[in-house]
Amino acid sequence: MLKEEVGPLMRRQGYRWRREGTYEKREGDLLATVNFQRSVHNTTDLVEFTINLSVLNEPIMQQYSETAKRHYEQGTPKRLQVLDGSWSCRIGDLLSGFDTWWTFQSGEQTESVVGHVVSALEQTALPRIESEIDRLAKGRPSVVVIDDED
Image (cartoon, rainbow, N blue to C red; front, side, top):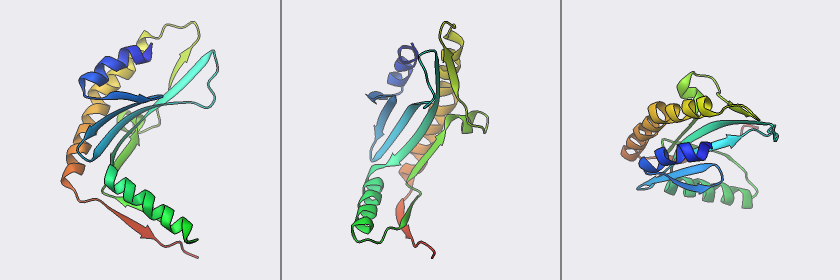
């Protein structure tokens, strides 16, 4: 039911369903994602989920992956950090500052949960993603290698 209610909103905003639980939208080199993460504790009677949001600079993430692979192959694993090339958070960080999980229980009405999720996406999450796309499109992201301290 959630996908049926969220899908039209996401399509109107330019997102496409790409893989299990994830909507994606491309803007130039940037990839925006809205990921519905299920709890590892879900059962047939209880489903909990949260929403992860991100905007990634694909060339920088490719550079990050290649740099990590090179260090691994050379036997010199390093911690890498992406600077100014990506943004991510959980939706709860935007809504309340706390991690937010929604729950569907077997036999319960789901309309209020679905309505809250759609509202949170429409009024808070998607506008924030758009502002991050604008911000990141103007920046010059980079990847740095951080030497592990011995």
